[in-house]
Image 1 (cartoon, rainbow, N blue to C red):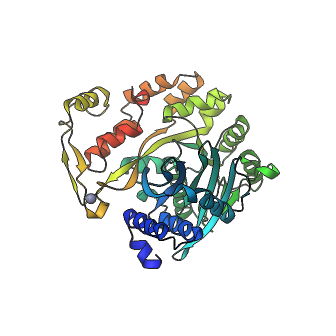
Image 2 (spheres, rainbow, N blue to C red):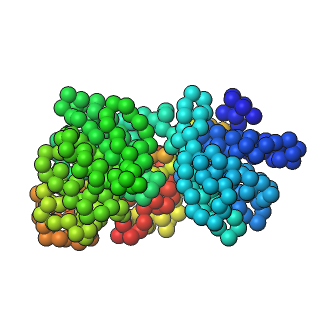
Length: 421
Ligand SMILES: [Zn+2]
């Protein structure tokens, strides 16, 4: 199976093709591996899982955030398959008892795609998970990210100041990198004559070639903090740091934000209000946080309804009651309408096609500065914002579900009730 044949094949075709290859014994493990990797890239897979199970090697692709079976191969092939992946990623084939990490670059169509390999020994054999970094056809612009118009407008007002610290938060796989890249691209496009941009990333997921991007290298102690300090010596207007995970990086980032730079980064926290308290809990000074932090976004990715087969869908009364109780939207609004994807050929009968973010955005104003100085708790900040008509992650999700973009169930799958209440 090559070229066009491969690109038009469905997951079921690939499965059947591999079954035939294996049953006829007319294959090489390297070919099976090649088909699995290339098909994953063509199917816009974000992760490939190769897992030893009692029934055989279960191969699954994560597409639009959901794991789908791609093949079940005989157990006898498992070690050979993992070995082949190790050879491609320069790992030790003779060691099957250690955790190993490596990378593979494969060419599919006209593009080289980067694959990050992780191999972990389990009791049933080695499990391989391969992350696919394929952003070649990605468009990095804020209008394409999927934020509401109102949020885009308010976000640009904060960003185009080119000052202070701006943070993004969300679990892994919530589209933070795409958003950061879109922000940088937008700044680059709008303010090219004013802004010099530098990034410190781990890993560099997409090379723009239009601004400076640095790769973290822990083997030579070049971490986020070291990269940030090095970048500051060259006095750029905008710096993107992959993640703030320690006090040192946090301190340098805040200080840079206070001295006329704009710093963009991510932080591990559940919600936009929690991001604020998280900085204080890390040990950063409240008055520095209050003056340097300009805003934060918390986001999750939900599956987008297929526009070809979307249809109205009545929610059961229990869910409607839950919405009434949790929603911070206008109480006088008409009863909410929801939708689902019936499933059609265009979406592979899944009812969904691609993903979009649901998000909450918080900009730090005078009131909020006061709350930060008082070391207010997350709940207090949240209640303050909601009393001013703020739209939470749940509200944004609900709005998108009512706007035929996603389902209520998708929103509930991504927003934990702890963050809503
Ligand atoms: Zn459809």
